[in-house]
Length: 43
Image (cartoon, rainbow, N blue to C red):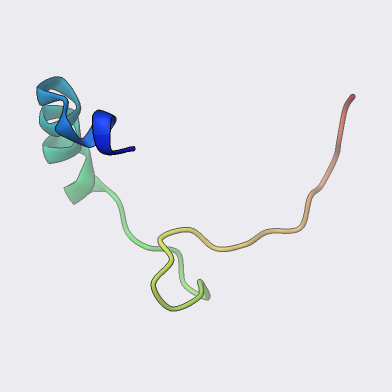
């Protein structure tokens, strides 16, 4: 993750994308995403 975060192109992408995202309601404190029940599974 540190190597990815240090990448210039990744930083540019995050700068564009982060304002378009909102944390999901009902998520745990400090989490960006909420845990969800698995709907289907394929092996």
